[in-house]
Length: 163
Image (cartoon, rainbow, N blue to C red; front, side, top):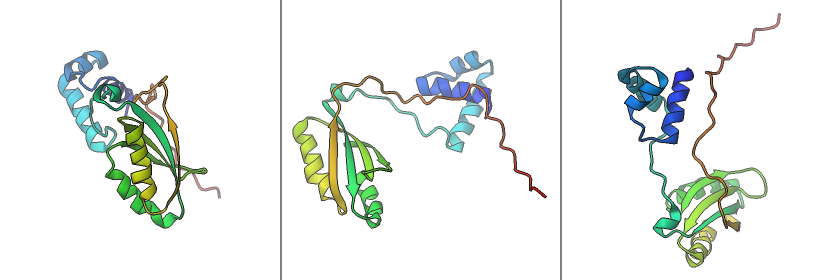
């Protein structure tokens, strides 16, 4: 990847509806060149997808929370991960170091549905021994924009064997 690829990625992650012509004008390439670069970025897995970001409150999900989940033994990790994939209220699931085994970002309509999610679903998954919930009162910053280098990183040098 070169600096132009990073410029293209920056434009797309800020607004995925930016047209290829607009990107071409910004980065100084032709539209077919931009289309080719975007295709390569998609195929390489650098771009994971294109989505519309929604305001959870405007669609009835008034509660956002982070839930720490402790698992009793590593043998439960795979089954837990599979079960979490089936719960639509879980937006993110991260395996973490520390007291908890996982941290979940969840949305819920209200405190009753959050209680049902925690008590009726999460705590009933095999291996779950404890949950701790932090309810979000206000969001100061929330973004999907990743910081990108301004220049392409230098290729890694191979270490030479010391005689």
